[in-house]
Length: 219
Length: 144
Image (tube, rainbow over all chains, first blue to last red; front, top):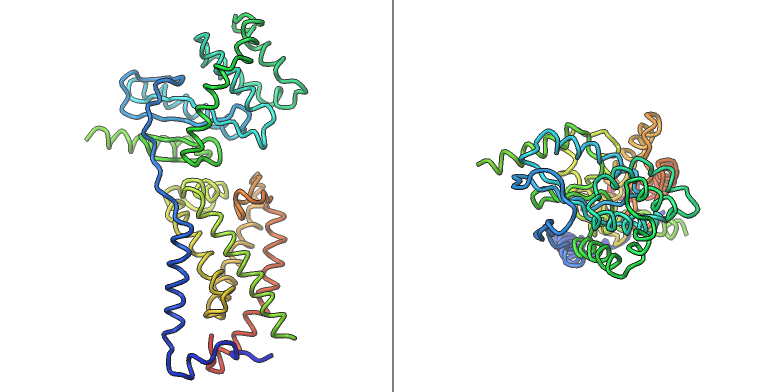
């Protein structure tokens, strides 16, 4: 072994600052190539299913996937926030099915969109999360989605037609497109008054965020 | 020959950290924050600042090691980080925290804590000769 042999020229020539120069150049180059633009969330969530306050001080836009266990885990937390602050907090739901890992996520999003069109989104949403483990393992989850729709009083054939319609697909694809523009990689992703939060939060952590936003909005 | 092996190891270890940091930098800090929170080690509120810094803490020593600039310094930082990651993964496994993806190479590879632990031990065993090699140079007053 010959330690210290590499690149010892610069020290010998009395230019010890060369390394620092290289480091600065390297960091600058890396920063330019990997710079990530700061993305906010500015679009109105009102075209999507919403729940809670009609004139909210805190708007939570959730990009979610019906087949994602983390989204399922976060739902009671969101529900609790809407119940605790009924005239201050609003939740808006947006589809972001992770089709690469969740086989039925896109179909579930279509079903959710149809339930929204029939005015029964939140009941259907709760049912989808409640039975997530069952239909996720199903060979053909479409049957489960139709069964659930029927259970909530929606006409089976009509619901199926809706799920297969281009209009429904377009609505889901619009949400996905929006998520991609916002560079969402995982679900659930929340935009709370425009600020991004990702993943599962403990109930007290999530409430802390909401209370901070309420304080800010109250100023 | 030995020097050649050290250079290969240096490039492999540094390259891994460079890749890992660059992949994290592609994500929004909130996504890295989610990975850190899933380990349940840092108090709420402390994870986000770590998420902001972590990619750079991986990229800078990784790039330095690959480029052969300040190799002893870079190798020491990486050694400390690998030690910390190994302890963290062992603790996570012992506590039975169900982590599906360690977030080590986000978007490229989904690793469980077990596979990440194995990989980190391999990286550490590759980094030790690099650290010793350049450490000797450092002690002799050569380039570090």
